[in-house]
Image (cartoon, rainbow, N blue to C red; front, side, top):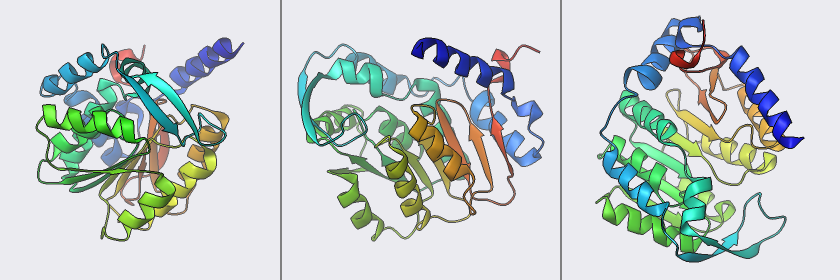
Length: 266
């Protein structure tokens, strides 16, 4: 029943989704074209994808302290690197889209909640080598693998912070004047997602762009996405099903479900 319900949800999303051509805000329509369609065939990230492929074959076993929605309380679990790579890494097209946003807006102060094995982080860091990515990971063993990813890719503009987000995030935010881009992919609970969004919002400005991952992951995440899109400071949102993008700039408006035009049957 869960699978059938999920398929119905995806089908409903597909039927209701717009392409850039159907977004009535011209500035937002142009932006969607630039970040989703115009640059989608780039090969400039092949070196990162080669590391992803190696992680998908990595049999190392990690001992992980789980702070997220997968546990009702803090607990230790064991997982292979390849199982984490298979289930937790953002897909290539999403990583490219986020990279395109950073390049388009020349974002310098970039924040990521949920480093995982460092693949999405590498995309964010590669998009602007002069910027800094503040990436947060809860599990020390996963952070160690992420550091190896950065070393392999010779990425030097990432500051990796390990530990419980509730402790580490407020401390770092106190020392960052403003955030230009944020990717929230950590604790998948309603309360935590909304809390982290509002914390980051205090360090944001009109041009800040925020990406919320897994917005259909659970009923709680759906509620969190609905809460965020209706926030008084939010001017527009783009729902790509796997994730959503939040804008604070008044030149953008409306809440839009979006799909690549090549997948939309006319």
